[in-house]
Amino acid sequence: MIPEAASGLAASDNDCNRVQVTWSDNSSGLFGETGFKIYRDGGQIATVGVNTTTYDDYAATRCVGHAYIVYAYNDCGDANPSNEDGGIRLGPPHAPTNCVAGSDNCDWVTVTWTDNSSGSCTEDGFRIYRNGGEVGTAGQNATSYSDNSATPCVSYSYSVRAYNTCGSSAASNTDGGVRLGTPAAPSGCAATENNCDKVTVTWSDNSTGSCAEDGFRVYRDGVEIGEVAAGVTTFDDLSAVPCTTYQYSVKAYNSCGTSTGSSNYGTRLDAPGQPTACSATDTDCNKVRVTWTDNTSGLCNESGFRVYRDGTEIGTAGADATYYDDTSAVVCVTYSYSVEAYNTCGISDRSNSDSGVRLRTPNPPSACAATEDDCDRVLVTWTDNSYGVCGETGFRVYRNGGEIATVGPDVTSCYDFTGAPCVTYSYSVRAY
Figure 1 (cartoon, helix red, strand yellow):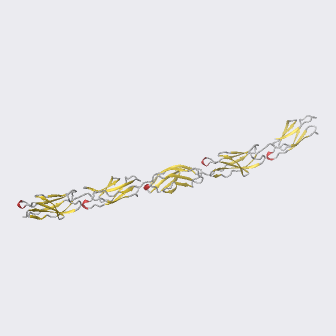
Figure 2: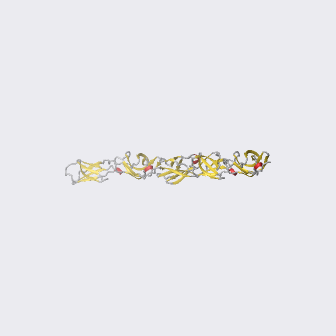
């Protein structure tokens, strides 16, 4: 007689290594079973001996539901089948795919992926790897992770693994990502001090790749005065006030922020200031000395001065000079003198004009005559031959070579009351 059918069959769904099938043995005595036949999905996979009520299926495919039935059997044949029950051997989750790491955020790298696990073998979560080292985890069914510990401007390789109690999946594909950041500060800022119409500011660009600048901002004494595009390393400041020294700095910027700056000093040059208080002498017999006030100093100082006589340049003087001696002036001729300063940027306005004369000794008088017909004096007369700017200061009268009197300018006679009567004297006159 065939044995009684097994009953109460149950197949496990909570084990990573097997499906455990259990049942109740309902046969005993002379009509007991010889053993049990175990079926999975309609095909026999094993037999077990008499009185056995459990079987471990280690060959079950992971994560796939199977239907299990048990038949008791003996020499008379197979009993009726037990009830059927579904069982699953658990396993690690499937590997995620389509891993993508972003390169467009200043605060983190966003890593995304496709979750390929579900059902009884779904993941408990995901582990995210950066350059092969785990940097974080994400929960069940998550498909993204933000890596805010990535160093800005450094490229990393990211991958993802799913995990559960049975283990970890294979790694996803890898993808490169970068956390953006503010650009590197420019260096080597230099500002010119030798240009007449601008200050040229230059610098070195130290930002490249994913953290390159969007452009540069240029500052003068801390105030922004302009911007240039990425990769440009020069800026012309055309609005600088001439002869004023400024501190220039340059900062790189992008969508993540602005770098620190690089600084230096620069000055826009200009033509020198107008000399003033031009004055020309009229008291010197050897020259006309022209003097003036120098109103320029520092970076915009003059290279020298040009001296003009009646509108024609007659000579130059060096930087910081305040006089010039005109030794070529014709004596007794009045000239108009003026001065201008110059440097590489140009020429100043001409100074005021002033008249000057080179003097000389007066012309000697002529036609000296002395009377011989007066009882109490001798009248000495002469012709005055000096006039104008070179006129005499006066005349000296001599008797027998000795000076006996002086008279003022333009006087042409002198009385000698001290001569002895009846003595003949020799008289002469000199202008001075």
